[in-house]
Length: 100
Image 1 (cartoon, rainbow, N blue to C red):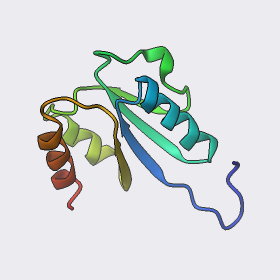
Image 2: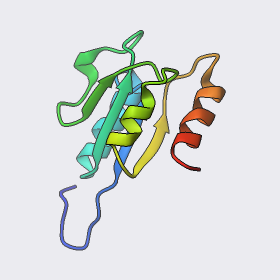
Image 3: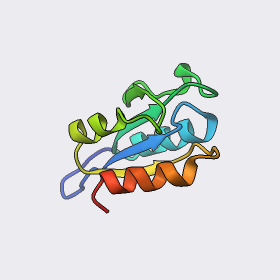
């Protein structure tokens, strides 16, 4: 979908966006005219899965450096695709950083 008059794009953050499911989500969001930021540590994902129009950060979502991304990237909507044992803690940390 191409951005048209009266349409508003949303900038999304997809963690795990280099994995199979995350990269398909990124592709779909970009096809729909949205801007996408991907965070992935590439532990299981692959760089070749990341859409070339997505802004990519190689980073673990548990890293304190994620704060810098939220300072740079304003008004992000969040999709968390990566699952691991620290997932719930990571989600809470990200939501707190976003002011929710």
